[in-house]
Image 1: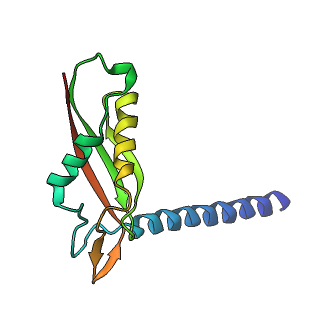
Image 2: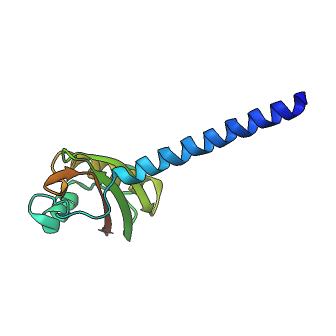
Length: 135
């Protein structure tokens, strides 16, 4: 009888733990809006964004002599105030370059016009390919 009571208590604990974890995951997913009325925008559009990245992207010291030609895919969250958070490299080409792309994307924080849903700013995700051509 005593073992059965412990078993039931453990089951109830695990059930509550799983429900709490599932609710947290749903809150995170819902806090970033996949459907918006107006997309997030960098001042001047993508052309100016890539100009900014090109101007600020510097080859890491350890690979300056190396020729590089490739793409890094980066994803990040644009917050309601236009700041950048959660920068993640989806596909990189090496630690040094990945860190440099993260550094440059973080420089854009506060520059973005946030996405809008029902005329209110909302969090959204932006994914970018960064083209590298250093020879």
